[in-house]
Length: 434
Length: 200
Ligand SMILES: Cc1cc2nc3c(=O)[nH]c(=O)nc-3n(C[C@H](O)[C@H](O)[C@H](O)COP(=O)(O)O)c2cc1C
Ligand code: SF4
Ligand code: FES
Image (cartoon, rainbow over all chains, first blue to last red):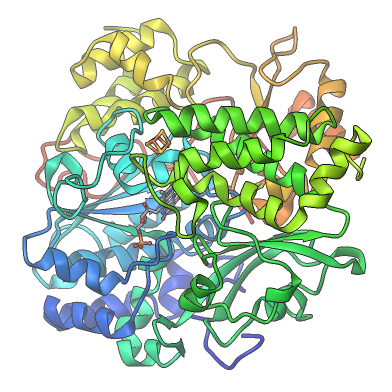
């Protein structure tokens, strides 16, 4: 750990080139957390996770312990692992799936035990072929080892785990769309209420959906105790978290850092982390938390990487991604590319999202190419307002899922921070950055 | 039903048996069919419909929702270049333009010899190695124009055959554990092949 003394929790094995094998896993304490969990009652295991204050790492940041507690009132039928990672500039689950699949499998079995679930599915994004192979190989070995399947380690508890391949659709990362997809349908999000997975999930049964990184923390939490986890970080943002750093930065990559105790500046500039802006240029803006998040400027660099801290400043840690733009980056082009993504990936069920994203993409493209008009800026805001009334943060939702209301984030940010630069495109009839 | 090979039919039935409801196997079966044929042929779609208990039109309507499922023939190698934000900041637009010139096709197109199909992809979750691309869902990162040309040459000459299986092959590891856990599935299938080393 570079900046603070916190231990590596989910990346402890990654210095080994064979970190994905059962041999390495067992040689580095693997499946000890599961053995300990099985010696406890399911309620005790759940209590440790609750005490850990483990916030979901998939994007919404909902406490895992609380999600599970809601479900323990009614028996849970299925555990579904969200390994669909497709939020642009997010690439941490990809790393965990390929490089430490046993850690995920162990986390899944621990969660299944705590929840009393006997059937789990790991939904892996289709494009992650190697990750899928590694998880399937790990599962095969884990079955052989007695860590998955009937009567795990002679405890009498059993769970079956199935790897399910996605097939290329960003929206399938949204938990209700993921469930539809797992049922063999198109990935159309379901309306909540009533379709909260906890109430009406997979095949209509109560279902827990958790992210890959969330579950990968469980072996450590059970072994070391929830209190040891919550002693790291601060407040609700306990433990360490993976940050995927990308864009105009010297050392892009995935870094595990202690929450709250580390700032955006540390992440981007520390020599052992990001190493500074590429080619020593100036930082123009950062996108925290995935492309659904509002942008920050250099004035936010000293903000701690904590869920509440970033939320109070008007954005989110979201999917754990941080994108750096330098002073040569065209903010308008960035907003256009992000909007094009949403337009391509909108599932099309809701008119504001389907039509709005298309209009916004066209207006932004025309502006970026120097063929726009001054009024286009207001037009953009008007369309955004139709998708998410008031363009607030967090956004108001008029659609089935939050993909739609996420579309205005980058556009409103670009206009708020770089309106002059956008208008320069109109004045010069071309992109000032060429 | 006879389009899927006997081995793939057996795999397909084993996949159906993994789920409480056969319909859940629809996408996994599409992947099996693509592994066999490179794309989803109408014959394979009929087989899948029968296996999961629905109509071919329903299978087609579902499959067409997913970018990775091809209902038209594609090249031996599908080259998917990410141009999303992190890759864009690292020169992905230039890379895509270079690829278009080098291969002589635009996104969506296939070279006349049937070797390459080009796609403009959304974020592939490999942004730490931007600009990056996938060939048949195997990653190549930190690409330059020269690196791209070398990659294409290697693919043409067959030196990457073990790293990059033909289009449609997703998971070369077959499930071997837990198949007889009381859900009525058939016993263990073909032995697992080894996963090549590498990855991020
Ligand atoms: C459009 C959209 C895309 C999402 N994509 C993902 C994803 O790729 N991976 C993920 O874990 N969660 C994703 N989520 C969040 C999930 O809906 C869900 O909150 C999460 O999987 C719950 O797991 P956690 O509580 O462990 O974070 C997405 C949400 C939305 C609205
Ligand atoms: S908001 Fe967009 S992605 Fe979400 S359900 Fe509506 S149309 Fe689909
Ligand atoms: S933006 Fe290109 S792989 Fe993520």
